[in-house]
Amino acid sequence: MKERLIEMSWDISLKQKEMLDVEVADIGNYTYNVSKMYVEAMGQSLSAFNGVNAGESTLLLRQCVEEMISNPEKYKAMNPPNGWGNYEGALAYVQKLLHECEKNPNSTIEVS
Image (tube, rainbow, N blue to C red; front, side, top):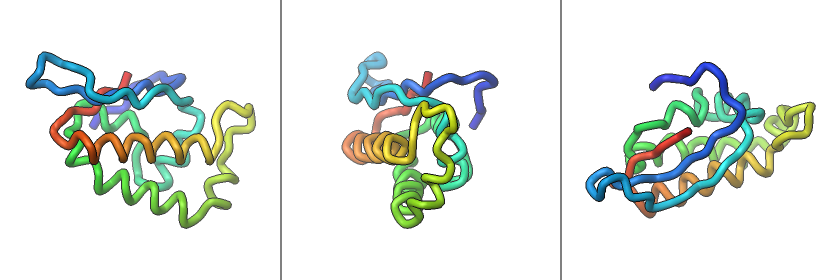
C-alpha cells in the first residue's frame, strides 16, 4: 500500500466498483495531523487503505479502535500542537470508517 507524499487531510469514501464507482458511504474529511496516532495504533496511516477492499480492512481498523480506546492518554499526548485535530476526533473518524466498512464489506475504500 502506497503513501502519498504530501497530505493535508484525508477525504475517505467507500465505492462499489461493480456499480460504476457508486459511492455507498462518505466517511468525510479529517486532518492528517493525527497520522502519528494511526501509525502507532495500527502500523500505518489511513492513506494506506486507498484501493483496499472494505471487508478486508475491518480487522486492522478494529484493532486500531481497540488500541486507541485502551490507551487514551497515550494518544491524547499525540494531539497536534497546532490544534488541528485531536484524539477524540481521530478516534471518531476511524470508528466511522470501521462502521461503514462493516456495513459495506464488498466496497472499496477510496482515500483522496
